[in-house]
Length: 153
Image 1 (cartoon, one colour):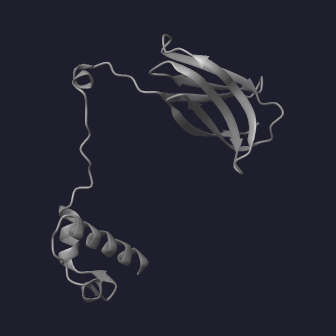
Image 2 (cartoon, one colour):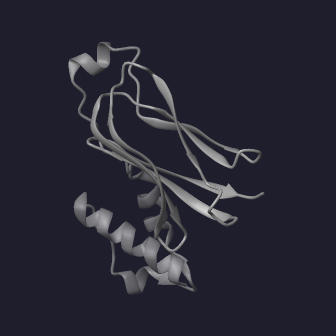
């Protein structure tokens, strides 16, 4: 019932925003199902927002994005390696490891980086950390990324 109420709320809100008419939600909700009129309204409504691109972005076919390429755990040396691709220079960059409670347990890298090397590796020893699920967080002057890693020896 809650799922249908949420969908009905979204359909009603979209109808108001697009100035379409929808009957009252109470009249439209019958036997736990959304009336077909609201289903059609949900199907016909596009949730995409047009993006504004500069002409440079349209002509640039080799545009890179910042991303975490991969996270590798070497069990023999207890070393965690984060492979990172940066699209632009970072005046400051922090790569840290967080436990599932949100506590910072290990700093992997802090400093400045340049984007002249497309993909670079950052490593840290994790011999003092117990097995478990962790979050690798990358925060920079104009980048914010996160990925999970499971440490199992």
